[in-house]
Length: 213
Length: 213
DNA sequence: GACTTCGGGTGACTTTTGTCACCCAGTTTT
DNA sequence: AAAACTGGGTGACAAAAGTCACCCGAAGTC
Image 1: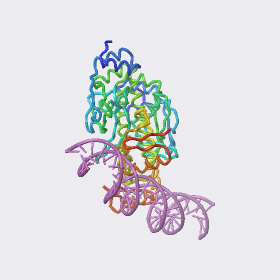
Image 2: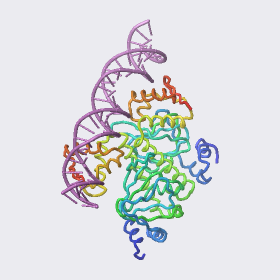
Image 3: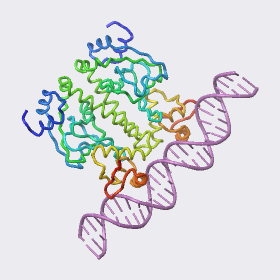
Image 4: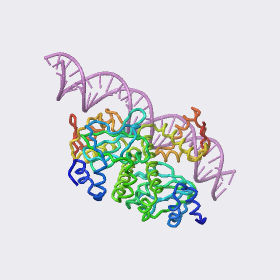
């Protein structure tokens, strides 16, 4: 294995893949770059590849009919987009939207390869299963949030998750951004944040929020 | 192939399976019966098998921490429980609850078999992928419903879905049952149903609701 | 320095949803 | 037949969330 950018990504981010699978992938995948803010996939778009994230960070949204965007979860380097697998396999269009929030790099695995990979490489099969499992769990948690919790709890949970994902307690989020991720309105979020500040859970600044504890 | 109950189920409900796979399944699965109202799986329970529904009808719920049950979707004969596949594969516990609403029969495919089936029988592999895809879509629709719609729209949608599933316009549902499926309260549902009746969309009776059009 | 934009704060009000209390009419039990 | 239970209706009220109007100050632009 020589040391191209692609082989580096695959060898460092997917060490669990058996060597033959890594070689195969290095030969077959194509690489693609996105700038922060760019959309990776639009509602209604068809996939011709399964997507592996290798650099940056991608936010996945569900789009409502009225143009609302409801935040679901993040994808990180080393993770795959479960929907791209599913939709690619069935040639169906996606009903979700992905946005790079940092400059990001992805590898595209042609769908024509999927069946072979699944049959020939157990570690790929396990990776796919684990991807499904993880995303399924994530969706169930999203459902929990909106089905059982009030906006205040969802907000709290949202901030925690952001902090974990971005690995910092200084969240560079405007109230407006939070509001649209949670499909609410700025004023409501502002008020709830104020309450959280009074309870000492966070500290508010212009353009960022500091999480306590 | 002789004609046991199991072989009948498999041959009639899964005709897309290649003959060798059907033979294999007929040898390996075990059969289980549930009476209407019984729980198939409880929150926290571990799966040792993947579940195929062959008779009856199963309702799947997500359970909240406070004991609430949030209805997600139905499983019908010929369908598999996606979560049982995922959880079985990873030996994880389920966080959902399944309830038979009719007397139901299921086939249990031991998890030990899963890897082999996936590798040896393309039609099994496609079946599993299709199951994931369908359930994923269904979860996304559930999210749409609670994220973007008011209770009135959700109720409307819920009634439509019930009618489709149960293949009748006479829905034998009490207001209380609807309320708990939607994680709301009886009074609210009663009021919304009244409004729908005034708009001529439904007709209300004791113990059942008649869908118009 | 004046102006504009952006992020945020706030009070007043509305809508939606949940809750409480109580009622009523069938149906079932005793 | 009386009592109890079930499914449903209703008014009054409370809480949560969304909306509107407007304000303010910080930062960027001209």
